[in-house]
Picture 1 (cartoon, helix red, strand yellow):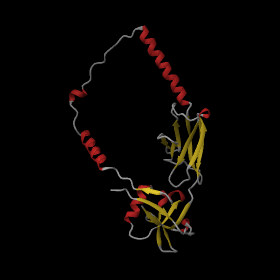
Picture 2 (cartoon, one colour):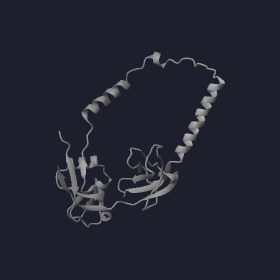
Picture 3 (cartoon, one colour):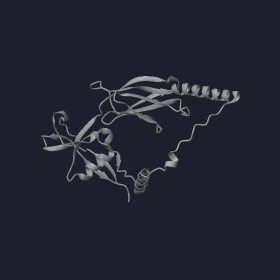
Picture 4 (tube, rainbow, N blue to C red):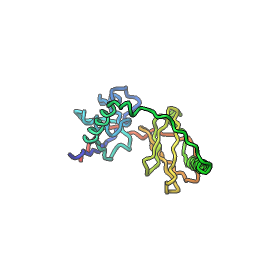
Length: 230
């Protein structure tokens, strides 16, 4: 079965003041049109699809510009993956034989001076590699521009890779660039739901680097949502 592809559009943006609306389920209530306005700006693509599927009429929403005029794919976990997951979960419940848990007495080995020197050289080499890797680190803090408070859960990604990290409760983060990263310039993407995406381009020779990143609230659009299904 083909996965549905949905695009969200707002043909005629509304000028009503979001801050002046009263809080309601899934968003706020607009007294001008007597309708609930769904706050899609804080939802993931999967959550947006759920709201659309459960709706019985036309939706009025608040969305980021980046959520409009692009395809939203309702990705679902394949059934085969679900079966494998259940099998693995059931295997965890199988008791481990006592024989496997039995511990042998530690074996004492006396190293020759030559072997000991080789091990010391290896440890020294590992220490040097670790120092080199520490130079390729981008770290700092992510703050909200409105109240200057830390942003918890913001994602920092090395563009073009799967390497990412998230900020802690104090907004702190640290991400390391792998030694085999070929480009001299590294692009770090800082993002969080409801905020504008920021990119930082840093040359490898300028690492390590520590800075404070300020996130601005994303531009929002209100209005009746038109669905285009492919």
